[in-house]
Image (cartoon, rainbow, N blue to C red):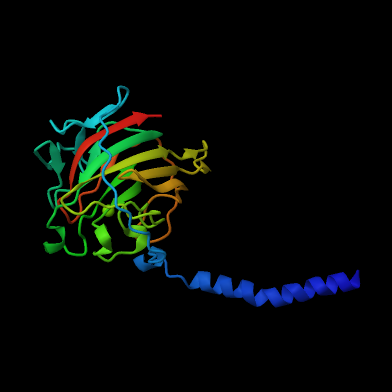
Amino acid sequence: MFKLVSQLALCLILASPLLAQNETDWSKKDWKKPETTEFYEPKPPIVTAAPVITPPPSDAIVLFDGKNMDNWVMSADGSPSKWTLKDGAMTIVLKSGDLKTKQLFGDCQLHVEFKIPADAKSSKYWGDSGNSGVFLQERYEVQIFDSYQNEVPIYSNGQCASLYKQVAPMANACSKPGDWNSYDIYFTAPRFRPNGSLEKPAYITVVHNGVLVLNHFEIQGEIKYIGYPTYDPHGKAAVHIQGHGSEVSFRNIWIRNL
Ligand code: MG
């Protein structure tokens, strides 16, 4: 018995520097720096793919059919969309802000087609090339970015089709700027208890240009540029499209409630 106890004690003594090391390293992390939640490895493999252009199924809610932006408002103040409508697509107007749906959603299947401008890299917004994003429930961002051939440097969990600042896509299936992409997103909303604590996290599956890039990923919480994601209780919320430093266009957006 004594031998067993002494062996256990020895194990704990030997393991303690390791535990202390981990604790020390963890506490040293500076959560006020955006870099803390940016990861460069592994870099997803590049896959050549083409957008999957799917017309809305009969039970889908058509959010954008190329004719008007009536289902959308500016996110900041609820005013009518300030983005441009041309050739069946709506396009971000720089510095106008984000767009969101009037309608609110929970569990859903969402189809979005998007195009990064052909001249994104030559613009003064180099480094922010093609930056936009599709937010589920206004909180969980599937990133849009010019990651074609990885020519524009960015951390893996910030490249196109990442769940921003949380996980990199399993593959880089980007079309080249100027060509259309498709996202098919399958989203399970988080569940909260009556006291506001998290009962079940959100999950997301994303297919980019027909390629599975996120497979039932457990979302860690609301997207944060700085700091670790956390959950705050919420109910149904809008689909939100980010207006950032690039004139990204959108078409054929539909959603199915699940
Ligand atoms: Mg973005």
